[in-house]
Each structure stands twice: as structure tokens, then as C-alpha cells.
Length: 220
Image (tube, rainbow, N blue to C red; front, side, top):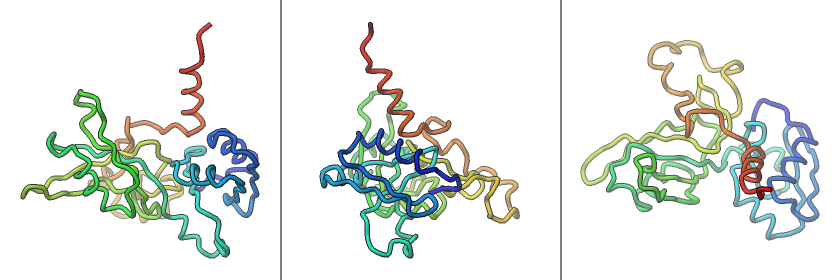
């Protein structure tokens, strides 16, 4: 999902590497930025489908089980996994129960993780959710707990590039079709790199795997 055109060879090399060389993998290009992945092993198919998000060249690769007529159902690819960090939580709110309540604003909750470190940088909740990426990224949400209402801010981890003008995944500010009216003042502060965990550009799955392999390679 994105404005960049990813070629067949790039996709094939990417999925072969990050999906762990699944046996019998066959890649078929069926349209612009649309591919069919034939994977004989049910175990591999489930592992890949349940994994992700898969990021290729800073764009999200949305993986869905094959179904007849998918060409007419483009909206089916709007629901994709995203890792989200939830910040501004009181210490006594950091629990899986609270995490599930926060995650209810998304399409589906897949995982809730409580970081185990003891420093203040670990005082957040991590959520793996299925979100509608055709909509602007959520900057946060309000939660009512124990009679109090609090704003909780989101940061996106391992995510694709998104537009700093409209907040949508799949294109940049340069090609954004959003109206230029109202872009000054408060509008300038709605979306930006501060929505990324770490505040910088996300690494692709391939780049992260390369770094991991470099980190675990034996020393001579």
C-alpha cells in the first residue's frame, strides 16, 4: 500500500528473506503493487499471515488469504497490522487489562505487551492491532478510568511512511490531495515524526533483519 511502485524482483527478494525462505514459495505479479504468494505449507502461510507488519521500502505490505474476486475488493486491504506504543499512562494503569481497553478503538487487538524494564522510558504499553490504514493515523485517545479522563498519546513502531499533512499511510506530503486550507496554525502540529517511536525513519523488515544478523554473527 503506497505510491512507490515496487518491482517484482524487489518483492520476491524481500519476502524470500524476511519470511525465512519458505519452501516452494512462488510469487506472481497480478497488478501494480499487487502480488500473489503461493506457499504450499499451511504452517508457513499462517506464520506469515499472523506476522508483520511487513515493511518494504518504507511501505506496508498487506498480506491477506487468497479469495476469488479480490481485484474488485480493494477495501479488504485497508485493514493491516500496526505496532503502537501508548504513552502518558499513570504507573498504576500499565496493565494488559488497560491495554485491551485502549486497543478497543481499533479494528482488532492481536497482542498487548508490557515492557519489563524499570526505567521511565519503559513506562508504556505496546499494542499490536489491526487498524484501518485508509484513515488518518490516530494520534491518541481519551480513556476514563476511576472517574478520571486522560489523554493517552500514540507512537507508531516498525511502521511505514505516512503523510505529515493528512496522517494517512501510502503517500507523502508532496502528493497529498488534502486541501491546503487550514494547514497553518494548529494543523501544522497534528502529524509529524513525533508519531514515530524514536522520532525517526522506520527501518524496513529487511534492514532490521540485516542488523540483527550482524549483531549475532560470531566474532573471529
